[in-house]
Image 1: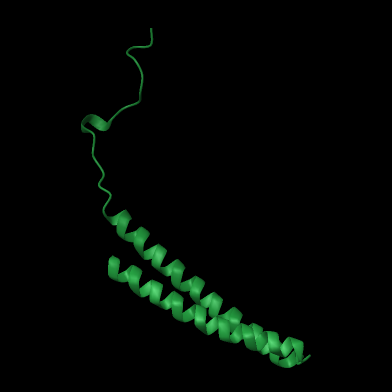
Image 2: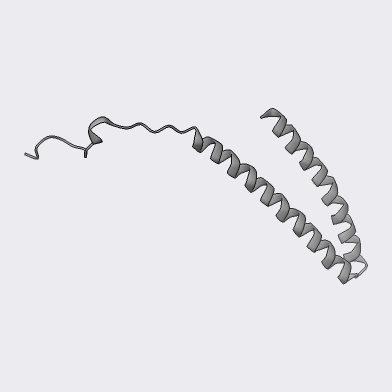
Length: 89
């Protein structure tokens, strides 16, 4: 599990550097009034963020499935019946 955390942390570091570079280019394009380039940059950044969200969702889903598979159920002898006390009187 520690290896997974380390690889996620490294991936997050690379992603941060990648996005910082694109954001700097986006700010430069906005400063220069280059509207077409800024739209493309925003589309790329959005695609990267959507991909990251899907990756995180997949990791969480797989973890939850793994935990769900470890849950054991117990069968109560005699069917378990309702709750409460006695013959109602």
